Length: 556
Image (cartoon, rainbow, N blue to C red):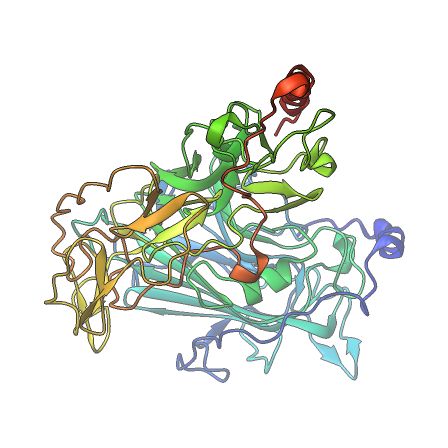
């Protein structure tokens, strides 16, 4: 059993977040039941304990070939009181360590200081007696505050049933589950020993035990959620692990669109790219700093969602060189200032300069208007099948890839469909996407997509960025020739040729990040060149030179 350092509890409690201020997540998804036993979660459970574990559990009845996890294939697991399972031995550590750690391979549904000691009349029965228990004694069938498991062919379910936190606190409880499911070998990259992991969270009311610096279930070192190879190198964790908000994150968020439910694929021993499509910072300048994570091997890298282009007068660093609107063209030779071509100059100045933005630096994808940084996509509604990124309409899945078992849908990697997995009224296409039956046999012209069995113009309702117009389902420069028809993608994807929709037969929501009521003032009079004549010409020219020098100071 782990040696607890109790002397730090009082001092840590003084610094902890008061329970009255601590956020508590509401009920999310129900736990899987129907597994037998008094709580319907199986007939095997941990005996009352603090920091204990089960004996080694032989899992070959459920997984004859074992489970391949990082560098090893395992035929046994240990169910640990503190919200995790391990493969090479029991894990008594009650305060979670930041991944990666060297102790042993671990899958942590909610690694925190769970306390399974029973209470009698509100008191922790035998405060010390159960601290030394290993947890592998006879199951005492608790009506709550228990850890159960069930093995059946192809699956193991572990349930932490309304569990409290150290020391014998049940004023807040966690109710969560881990489900391991075997995956049959297939041409989609699945092999022997591969499996899926599902975390389900029903109640999420505490983050920290008293001996981990917590008070009333919060503060101190909060829970860790994820996967660790135990080799000091490889790990995957849910973002927000070990922060004060982790209980809300696991109950209210999801990586599969269902709050409280998290699903991960383990293929070839590694966790398959769970974070594709998340916003990230590429470290580049200008609009090129806006990125999304993309699958690369078993991990991700941050890739820019747009590439450098010639500068336009739009208050953005389009060419990603660190300077906004330099050399941006204006009609009749005018000068661009913060996305606006200046009006006629007089002998003293050029009116219209946005002085409030001279020293303002905005993050990637934002522009300065009247001294405030606003979303560059405000007021833009992109054509169906495209999204607004950094003030441009680009294909939703442009620039990043998915693993061989997934397909890009609206900029997110989702599992490829197969067989009847799309559900009633839908068909699984060869490209791995689902499409409604009404559109499965419909072929639309380029620039159109199928909705409810009819071809719809992708430009309908589109509001393109300043200076662009929608042609053939794309926002293009008003002065540019029409884009050529897109090539046949060979996907036989029903009625969306030329439009990168998700194939479900329903138009995607319009791609603008903002709404039309928040349109940024990123344009001006098209005929706004600075002109002067007669004796004021030299003065006005000097004003233009000084203005140009001032504009060069404005860096992204």
